[in-house]
Amino acid sequence: MDTSRRRMVSSLALFGGLVAGTGAARAEDKTAEEKSARFPGDPPEHYVVYQINKPEAEYHDHIVFSVGAMLRQYGDNIKIAVVAFGPGIHALLKNPRRPVTQTIREKIASLSDYGVDFYACGNTLKSLRLTEKDVVPFAKVVEVGASTLMELQKQGYAYISW
Image 1 (spheres, rainbow, N blue to C red):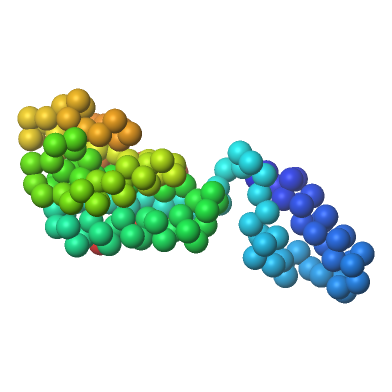
Image 2: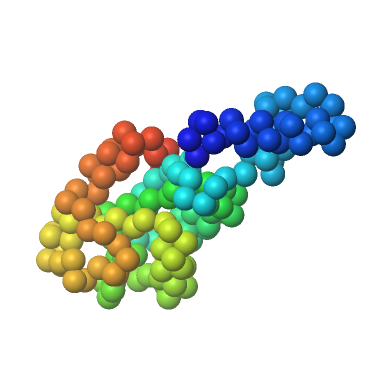
């Protein structure tokens, strides 16, 4: 939310506290509920990007669980991206060439329904002689996965790696 709307919400919360007789509340002392007061369409305050670059099922479980935990923690106040490259690309393939559990595939699809952006590395696809047609429909193919990680970090995304 822009600064003027945040100030207005904070002022209303402060004014409401004073009227209710709760004393001289300060903007810094906002409750968790007040901090999460956001208007629909407001940009999130938090940005995070994960990488998936390993093929192991346990590794995929950890990444997917962490992404879900971040969504539970921040709700619509976070934007999450996941970049898959190297052996991790199989998690975003329609027909993986390495084992990816059906549970992980379903969880990844569900996370996309919750607004998580998934990126598949085009270089990795080329090296496997695959194309965009081989990637799940909700994932965006980017030319270089590593450069996408870098660009998202430049845009303010925190980088999470396992």
